[in-house]
Length: 234
Ligand code: ATP
Image 1 (cartoon, rainbow, N blue to C red):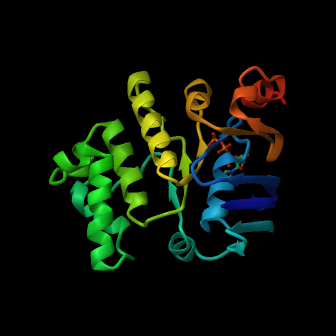
Image 2 (cartoon, rainbow, N blue to C red):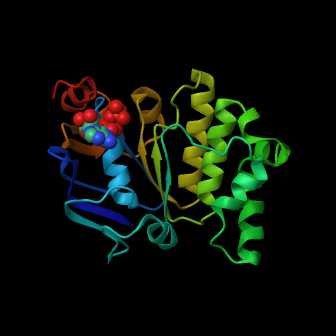
């Protein structure tokens, strides 16, 4: 289980994250909602070791991972799928997946690759295609697959539906559900609140770097604090 307590992070004089506490539980999707600039991406980056926190603690199964370099955090079992997917366009699907699994032993690598192709049959079909030729939805699946190759216990997803048509968004979020159902803890930032709430278990609403509400997804849908945070008026 990933636990974040009283996390602070910023850029120069801008304190983008101001005391965020949240957790991601195995088998569950925790959805982070909030307006543009609320500090969602910075929170994920600070957890993943891509942006140094200035205060607070991040623990994984009780062990402190605060401020470790990103590659060490991946090794501990936390994988980030960044906003905009960032697949390596000239490389094939198989090569992109290989990069995600470079820390694994050969036998673990082959096993994880097989699991990955089972979860995303389209990646298996297109394993020899250049990643840049895939559709947006397929690239998002590749970005998920690349993260899963490091055998994470927790995945951090930054706006997986960005730029995708509604029907593709639904199928991407269904695969997020599948990831959680396989036992992974998912912490997901998603602008499409309606679609995100359909698959989420827990919700954390943030405004101006602070958590303004957290609770079960079923209670978030008509909650005024969540709505205001999402609209940037909290
Ligand atoms: P969005 O949905 O627009 O990505 P967000 O909730 O993810 O928003 P962040 O990207 O974490 O928010 O940004 C939080 C605050 O930090 C904003 O005020 C933003 O302008 C500022 N910020 C983000 N990145 C930088 C940076 N590289 N340098 C300076 N300020 C930054």
